[in-house]
Length: 264
Image (cartoon, rainbow, N blue to C red; front, side, top):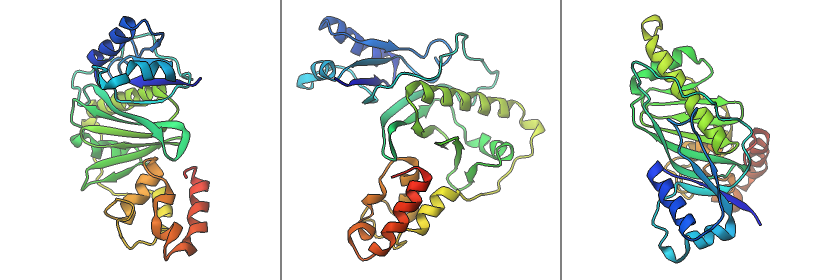
């Protein structure tokens, strides 16, 4: 029987879920972010799928979960020391609001975390330091790759696609917390950059779409759909014109480039 893991938007929701499990005498395990990732995550619960059905049965679970995904043991250890503090903390704390399987890779997860801070003013400094990243001044958004993981940073939220599992997502959120605060502390030494650079992987997917902006996929433009496919939020097969319409001549090329980029 498969195991599932759930995380929560707040520790209070985790406590409610754990209390219900205890009341029902149901077995579970806890994956904790404490102490090292305590500012970017809350404890998560691992249980058998049958236990989850009993926990959430009859629509009266009494708690809010950010999502459920297949459980995979963490490959990264949670640091044993508390997270560093910053005199001027522009990041604040992160709360994972969405946890879901990654469409691009079923063995990975995607998360969306909301921030208590505001990162708007740090983007030009990060852009100067991270030349491999993509900065959209008009978003504003800041996107970069952590190996195969795609990270999109907005002023008050962060989306991560292709994280290995929840601890890996916490690790990356904490790394972003430290990087943004360290850059902010050094902003007097950094020349801010407003240069806008293209994001090649999504651009390559876009080149193999009809670019008619028909909205059959639910996105306003083919560009938005290409970014969503690359980030794991949609499958390329959701482009109806290519897979079943008048643009089927693009299908093989689209499938090939997506396969080469590690997305579906």
